Length: 436
Image 1 (tube, one colour):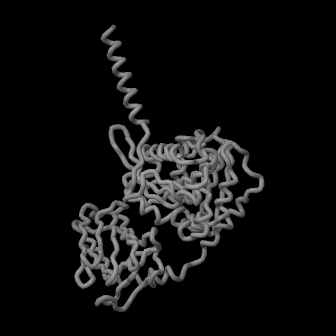
Image 2 (cartoon, rainbow, N blue to C red; image 1 turned 90 degrees about the vertical axis):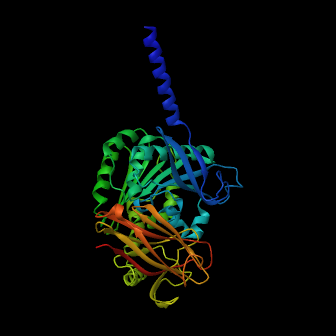
Image 3 (cartoon, rainbow, N blue to C red; image 1 turned 90 degrees about the horizontal axis):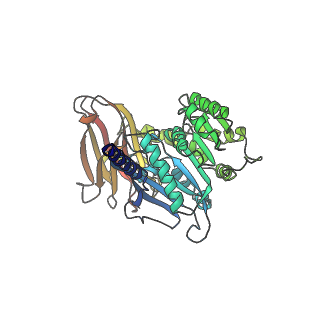
């Protein structure tokens, strides 16, 4: 009996130790020289290190602190924003591509007035927001940021776009009492019954937004709204007439959306004068108009990169095709959008077999340089400086072996990272897949 008791004690101690390791607070460290505990207003690139069972894992994230954070002794509301599939990875700079950081940085006057802290975790490439250890990491990160910075715990808001819109629900299920509102944009459904059961007594307000033309998310969003209503939650379902999948810029770039968030507080009754579902739907209709500049740039891109698309171009120099540049004919120019927001060429393609190669001929301004990230399914397979010390007569050729992805459908991204210099635009002479 004594021997059996000792075994039970040992088992209990081991179990207790494993639980303590699993639930131990993680640590936050700097990315690329940023302070590990910033206090200055603005965007900060950080990394959250945590334990997942026996494994040590990391989750990069952006943290934006509002104007006055370092001067005013008060607590601030917090927006937690989950990004889409194209921004996954291990580099927080990718989080500027889409979502709340991107849309606010495009409107500096709006950004300057934001009375919020903003937290944007980065989803790993080997999972999604509904992957249990990923959702758990986000939950623990939110808890740690709330504790370590001056955050008003009664005004924490969870939102997400596309993949992140659906990811709001598994994250919220882990801490049902944490959020004042949950705003899912183009996210569809994720375990509606389980989510409704978990949130039933939380009192959270759920805003679910989808576009009428987005056949992927509309049915799931309706299912999600119905399940949450059955749990007697405050649910606002918004379907934007003729709205596309990419709806979030209409909301993340509009002061009224943030005023709507601020009018909600955890544990308080919903405000009676808030915007209606119809008014919220009207906000999204601004995205229905075609963009002639985008169409022109996509069309011109086909000369050097057939079946590729471009987004997040800047206007420091005019983007698009040049007949001749730095000794090459038909050169496509892509400046990054800003000092934070990268430019990107992207495509989804089924690769040939057995040895596909991504062939690139890239160049730079004679007085400039830039950094290229080559990503396959959001995983970086090459990082390359493009500048005078790396090129011959302003140009370089790269052949990137994609054999590991032969015969697979993949998402390819060519990212132009801002260099912080005057001439940081990328020159493209050829982008093609060989091995057919």
